[in-house]
Image (cartoon, rainbow, N blue to C red; front, side, top):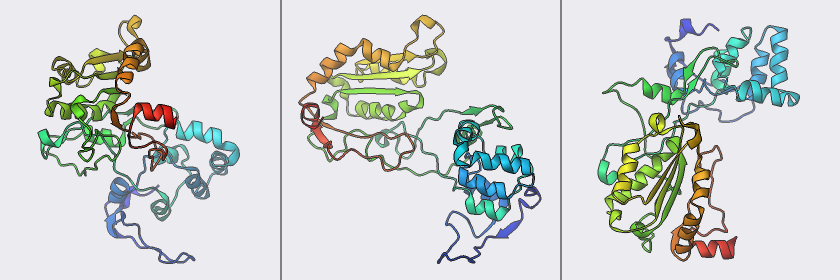
Amino acid sequence: IGFLEAANRKLVVTVKSQNAVKNTALPPYIPEVSTLRYIFTWCLDIRRSPGRPLLRVLAECTESECQKRRILELCSAQGVEEFTKFVRQAGLSLVDFLLNFPSCRPTVERLIELLPRLLPRPYSVTCIRELWGKRTRFIFSLLHFTAAEGRCFHRFGLSSGWLATLKKGQQVMMFLKESSRFRLPPPVHSSFDLVRTPLIMVCTGTALAPFLSFLQKLDFLEAEKYKVRRELYFGIRNVKDDCIHYEDIMRCVDENILSHVSLCESQPYDISSKKYVQDALQERGEKVRIGFLEAANRKLVVTVKSQNAVKNTALPPYIPEVSTLRYIFHVVS
């Protein structure tokens, strides 16, 4: 759409205040003096699937009547299902969309105005400060998207694809944010003795990350000295190709930090051993139940882990943060 020729030219971005909105200002994430390449690479998210409000604007910038009508269909109330199927579920980016509708030629001003901010990608840290100091470790999976279903070229996930290209010595801008909910009980809960607290951890794939930091913390506190039920149910495709940090997990078993591990393969080479985490929990149901009964009167801290798009996820007000299983299931539920 003609951006490439001017991509590296310096420009000054300003706001035309010709409407009724007062105190209109340039968003803080858009530098006043920059280049188009910088803005569309580091400031705006051009890889996110365009929403229906953006499609309405793009329809206004489309010359072909046939293509314009199709875009209007996708953003109409009657076209919600088709929009979900062909745009959202297919994971079309703005670039894919413009390549599929070549007569759609939006202006730079409209795109800067309407495109969402490129947000930082969060990853769970897999280590603890007591052992790693200023270093950090985290897990990411390399997402791969083929050129199909309207996607015009194959690509990797935006953040994971970029991380995979880094060479030793390159720098990454990052910041640490301490989890307020999904964590081991903080020191403020002095009534809690972590090394004597039973733990049942269930996860799949890279969701193992926070549990690795939990296990490191328990190792640091010498939890292996205490015979306590600490179980991990880990869902993977298969042990040979997909079991990340296998050695760390097995070491925790050998050193009595973990009392039990179930590695549940959803795509094993031997199809007869196919198993999901819920199958493993069901197989050990009686032992898990007894473990809960043993811990029924012990104090616990109830936390919330939110990996979805729901913001401000919080513990329901009727669930006390510090309580016992017996109280929660007999009085609250």
